[in-house]
Amino acid sequence: MVKIRSGVLPAMRSTSLLKAIWIVAIVGAMATVVMMSKRGREWHVCAKLSGCRTRLVAKAQKSSGGLRILEWAGKGGLLPQPVLVSTAKTGWREIWKIMMRELAPQSADGQYIRPGYTLRSKIGTPQHPQKSGRYRLYVGNACPWCHRALLVKAVRGIKFDSLPHTSLIDDPTKASRGGWAFGSSEETRDPLFNCRDLRQLYEKLMPGYSGRCTAPLMVDCKTQTIVSNESEDIVRMLNDFDLLDENQTQDDTHPLIVDLYPPQLRNQIDTANEWIYKSINNGVYRCGFSTSQEGYDRAIKDVTQGLDKLEEMLSKSRFLLGDKVTESDIRLLPTMARFDSVYNPFFKCTTRTIKSMPNIQGWLQDMYQIPGVPETLDLDDAIRSYYSNLFPLNPSGIVAKGPPFNTTDPKRGSHVKQDLFYDKAERSSSSSP
Image (tube, rainbow, N blue to C red; front, side):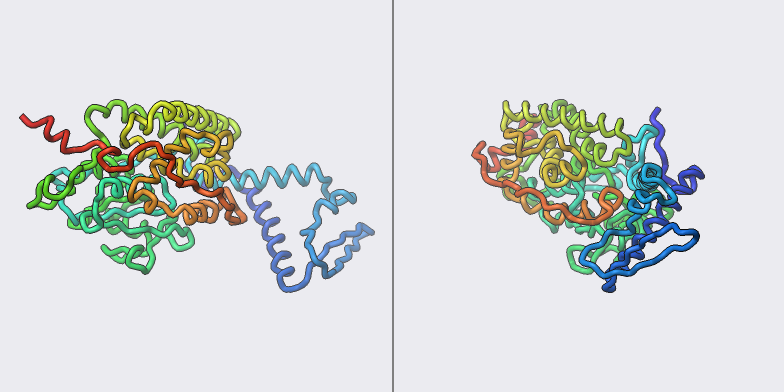
């Protein structure tokens, strides 16, 4: 059984704590020098070992050499350079691992282990009957798991009045736990309790809740309870969400009701979803959140093999499982849309790029021709969120510029709705006596 390291600070070994204190002291000293330089003076510390005398020389200059610790070491300082560098690397790595375990639970050998979800009811039960306007979905733009829920809403034409959603703000400095907070605009405020952040909403809906406060989150507004916070379940229940008003029929309102999980393909969809999740959806996170070389090597192997398998599949068909879009395409799209801009450079998924794989790139461009799909993601904002908020992976906060995102029509086929999707009406008619 894989053991997950909890990431709770009191569990640190004493040696790790000492190393953490040491590196924090060094960082604090460096920060002090930086603050002094911003006031217009660049301070050089020149140490001369002559008895017990040390001379401090202040000198204005155009560039900063930091504390020049390595210069001291090279001139016969208290610590030789090899010892100084090794100690600094060990201390920095130890405190980085501590921070990573807080961000992403780890196995004993440094592999990222995604926690499970326990809030898994569904719409369509006696407790949560299907009813237009009764439920609200909470989502965040940067999150790929939220993105898949928005994609289902978009391609199935679920109107905002039937199932409204609130856009969360990804800002750990405003959230009491995790990163999701509410804003003041109509799109970002919490209409239920006017909560400050997602943690407060969880506590309102489930008093005493102590688990992870994640999105997407489906809420029953009438009973003020959580339906689910598992994206897999939310995607499936949105596919079964009744789009029709009580007094309307399918023929009156919709020429086609999109079915992303048709009965004849369910086994194939389930199989594809399983390996795509392991090697691609979660594989990129296993790369980015690994804290050991062994953990990373396993993850990048899965990602590489998964991408190669996708490239081969898409050389034979327009979409993953044939000539129409299924749930598997929806679950894959958020990862592929972020891959070259975020997962390749930032999560070290560097063995492949989407641009270098013409069949995957053509599929991605094709998916972006579907009405409603482009509006489900603000890619620039997502890039900013990853680089700015995952502090242990990017302490500088510098946001990298991603490559241009190609949404040109690849001319792979028609984008008429009837040609893109399976129809639930066909399921109903075929099951009629």
